Length: 223
Length: 306
Image (tube, rainbow over all chains, first blue to last red; front, side, top):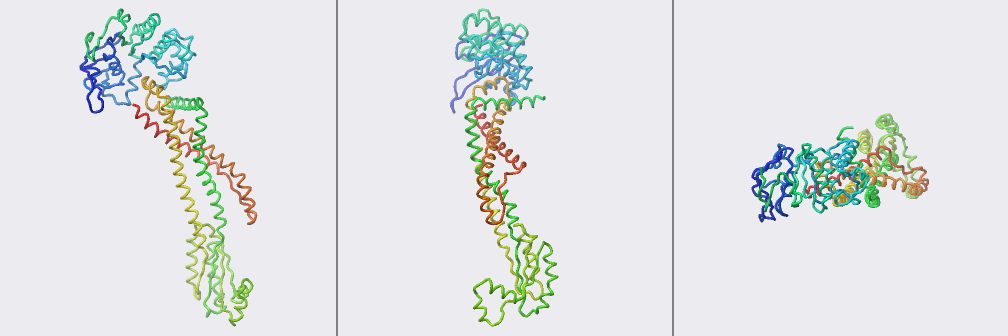
């Protein structure tokens, strides 16, 4: 499902060559796997996830997602790649000027889906994360944990093949974090590939497979 | 409804939603753009009204044909059928003026009576005076010239005078006015594009987060750009409507003054608003200018942000 083949990412600052965000990373994540990306801040977890979503392109090597070489996809093709990926951000990034339902419907609407169908699917997604009764609430009326669950609902509304969650439990208390993780595990249970980045030991304690990164290099869990 | 149409409807709703969120700002921008559009629209309305008037006013060109002194009266009068034939292209009116009648007329109309008495004999030749009613339009000056040439070629003709210079002048004046209006419209069109460009730039900045999130959720560039295009076109369209409204309102007091002026010339001339087709055309142009401004802004600012 996801494969990194000798992938390096080096940022340049003007003419100067910067440090490596990822260096010679090779790994494979199979279809339907639940994988945790672990490592301290700056280890390269976010860069790795951005590459899967087509936000960043490798400086060298290949990133294969669902059979497509991300580095070779034309810019116009990237949105179509992303429609198969549900992304959960650390800071949720909900749109504060529209309600929870509208936020959750957005991934459907960008694909040209019917409003009625988008609403129906958004309601189902909110139901799965236990927030259907808050559908008409505005994001700022919700707690951090609830906002993160809305972000999960938004990520799954399109029924993606892959879910990328970047530090989804950061800033959440244990109860809220468990709810978010339970929701993600339930999608993994129905065959969705989940990649969750975290540096929270509490989350990693229950992980089956952990890919560890340090200073942009893979230090464990590659295959 | 096809996905394509649905996406357009979504973009239109998104654009209207943006307007609804900040109606004051939108209204202000509409007024600024309308201000720029009012001047060329007013000029166009004026030209549209003056064009038929100029055709009406083109005062039937008058041609005077003077016979040589040695041509006898019967020979001079014998030319009448030929002259009628030449002039018959239009609705010409031909009048033979005997030299005696011309002299009497000159004496009566000028203060040269005494001078003419001292001459002893009549210095004026027999002549024809023609009014070319069918060549009224300013653009017909070339045809008047052609008739003049044919008259000049008739036997016994000394000179042919034609007063069509004013027709040419009018045509030239209208041409200059049209060109000036075109230049003015072009300049103000750029102003409209610039205003819309800046309005959309600010919107892009305001909605930066929404754009970024939408991109990550799989929105295509078209999906992201479309609402801004609709906003620009909507802004242009509303401004065009306001500008046309202002011009229509301005016609009322203007017509009051014009009616008084026209009455002195025995005319009932009044400025009229543009026809439905012209109004639709101007609204389309206004919306088009807004769309161009939005497209330029979106291409520039969203391409930069990527």
